[in-house]
Image (tube, rainbow, N blue to C red):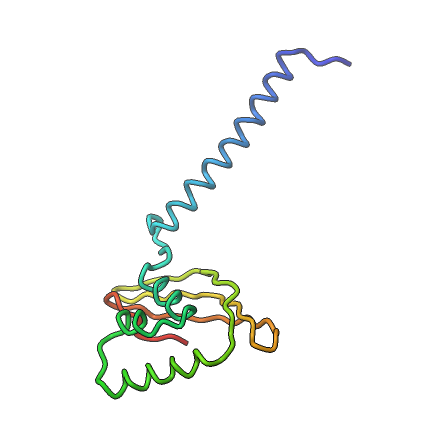
Length: 139
C-alpha cells in the first residue's frame, strides 16, 4: 500500500506546522509571562540584586536595597554580615521560582543551593517581600 505524494506532503506540512506553532507560542508565552504582560510578574531587578548581594556577602549592596534604618540597626546588620563571611559557605545555585504582586507589594521566591565548609550540600527556599523598590522582608 503506497500513499500518494499529495497525502504524505500534506501530513508532513501539518506536522511541521503544528510543531512550529507549539514552539512559537511557548516562546511568546514565556516572554510575556516574564515581562508581566499576562498578569503575572517576572523577577524583580531589586529582588535579584538583593539575592546576588546576599550570596556574594556584600553588605554595601544589601544596605542600598533595604529601607533606611537607624545607625544601630545598620551596625548590627554589618556585624552579622562580617560574621557570616567568616563561615566557609559556597553558593552553588540560585533559582527564581516565581512570585506575585498586589498593589505596591510583591513577593519573590527563590531556591538557594549552598555547600557548607564540611562539604555538605544544603538547599533552602527564601522569600523576599519588595515594596517601593526596597526589600522590606526576607524569610
